[in-house]
Image (tube, rainbow, N blue to C red; front, side):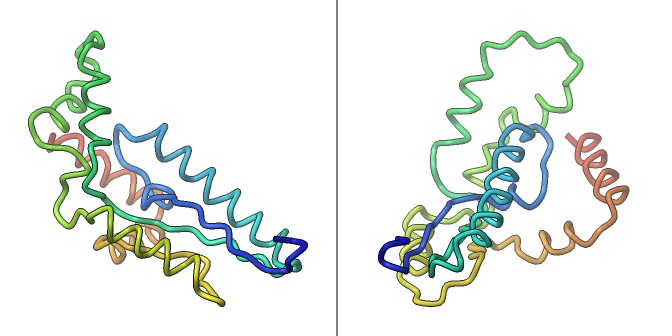
Length: 154
């Protein structure tokens, strides 16, 4: 890309690269890191005519959540995280959430971003965009209270 003087790096992140959710700490952490690396890389390679784009889909209809839940089925439950067990037991998974996107819809966004001669830095393909904006603008104490409320409701 440097030799050619153009190109686009497309990284698939997540809405969880910009916000957090209970029980998703490791995933959120990995996506936050990808966001930071992409933002830094964008600044570093822009002088070479290279764009760096982040795709931030919300829930996608995959089997990712089912696989994750199967993985934790055999873990010993201590009772310390009953709220977590209640949050996910028998209630479906993130990839079956209302507004979940078909994988093809995300692929279309990837193609759009990769082929755009002047791409945006971020492509949010989620019905949760407004909620994410509020999450980013809300003070940490408000966000923490909201997560505690989710725990109590689980």
